[in-house]
Length: 294
Image 1 (tube, rainbow, N blue to C red):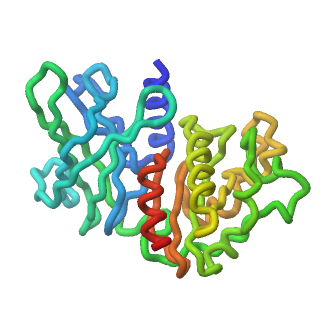
Image 2: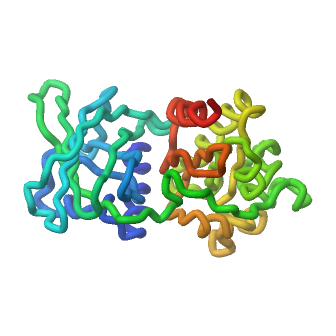
């Protein structure tokens, strides 16, 4: 099934990154009954958007409109019972492909260390149950922290290259997303939405759909904010389907991206107002964008 392929791709990316949040320890025998798999790879102290999925014993996703998430701080001892910290409502966000998606919730992490997530679910035809998963929270994030200055990355624009194929791997690029560099945008005094993705080479096949969401938002809010797409690879026109030819764009390292896609909302003062890991639908991005447009 497509959704199983997508989940396996996400898990593979997480394992390659060596991140606790996506640990597959629970896959060892005997397997757990149900499982919360936290997909967010860059959780740190402070307010965060947490993305996760719920898997049944057959490793198929459970999908209901919303669930209640409770977090517990474990310190350095994953076996500890933990101290309950916060309860939040997580909403299911459907992806545009494969009949799949993820849950997202806003959670504030006060301390670094090991954490446990518990989710109350009622599978169809079954009794209510508590499903749990474990993940780590770092003192500092890899990507720019919310409230920090957005990196002044000097990214290429349509004025720097002879063709759009040197700026993006998209099969149908929108030139409006390459009119201004990140450095100029975040110092322009206007809010900015920046999407980092590689439509042709995305490991989860969601970069193209993510770019379509950005296009929709640009069509509605283009006069009130800057909209930029940054291709993950600096030489998309030279890859020719073989990533051994690919060179990472300097901005990817400057923004500390562990994976793709990522979308950032920067306010008019050039500070990171919000950030979104993995595919994010229009509703979440629009809510954040409207908040900085005012």
